[in-house]
Amino acid sequence: MPVYKDKNGTWYVMTRCDDWQGQRKQKCKRGFKTKREAQDWECRFLLQQGGDLDMLFKDFYKLYEQDMKARLKQNTWEHKACVIKSKILPYFGEKSMKDIQARDVLTWQNELLRHRDKHGKPYSETYLKNLHNQLSCIFNHAVRYYDLSTNPTAKAGSIGVKNAKEMNFWTKDEYMQFSEVMMDKPISFYAFEMLYWCGIRLGELLALTTADFDFKNRKLRINKSYQRLKGQDVITEPKTKKSNRTIEMPDFLCEEMQEYFSMLYDQKPDERIFPISKSYLHHEMDRGVKATGLKRIRIHDLRHSHVSLLIELSFSAVAIADRVGHESIEITYRYAHLFPSKQAEMANRLGELKKGGGF
Image 1 (cartoon, rainbow, N blue to C red):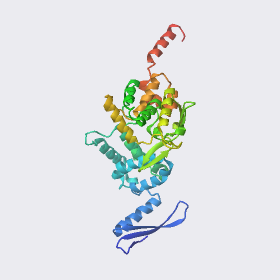
Image 2 (image 1 turned 120 degrees about the horizontal axis):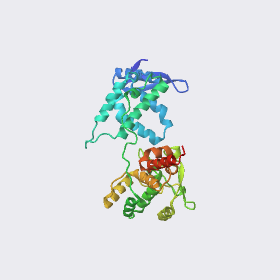
Image 3 (image 1 turned 135 degrees about the horizontal axis):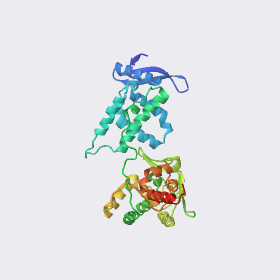
Image 4 (image 1 turned 180 degrees about the horizontal axis):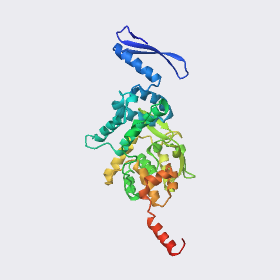
């Protein structure tokens, strides 16, 4: 299709394409400074419409967005898009999809591995793994749905390690020191009580309403999560299907939360009982750590603290997983070092069996 010069001196493209229903539609794109820019855009647009992998990586990303955005939770997509736009598109955006090779991926990986922030620290192993996975997802999509022959990230190999962060947690005594200095601000105190004694995620905490509590039966319903996205409060479904669950609370926590509810004024059943931000609780954590001299852990580490406490109390991985909304195999894998070793007991039992002639 030819390109045209507009009255204001810029150029525009008028072309036709098929929509998702197979109907022929006219497409107009204006505002190009030169004729060449208009022609380049039209060429890329037609390649994109035809799914031709001669297209640039940045144009394929637009197809990937169209295909995947509606299938993912809003906060999941926002995180994915942020990573891609900041760390992947700047490097691969102007390269042709079909021309990207494993060596290009290796060069990109090496740049990430060499990165150091202003304090001389590299990217974390978990973050590197996440970056690699996001790039791999895009190429896997191209292989599966657009007939790309191979995924170059598979040939290049992965970098980073999933869940590589050191797992920190507080003991019960450490948490009790912390909670004592939080008592001067009720909203902070009761929020941290819920996080530590129930092991819920921060987003799950901030989405709680009075309707989620059944004090008669000591039940707490977890069926939603709070996110702050693009300046808006957003309530989504929990992180996974397993995260939809009901938790039983200890008696003292039921009493504490009823005390907290009595402090709320004109609270509606569907209103958040903790109308605060994640940032607020991070600052409160800093305040408590400074006042007590405890080691600084992340908010999410209170969840690890809850799990470690349940392991210390001899609960099984299956029971713990059901409470915190994980698969039992994930509890076994992530917290294996906290479960007491059975090796000595195994060796003793085998010795007893041998002596008894039971083989």
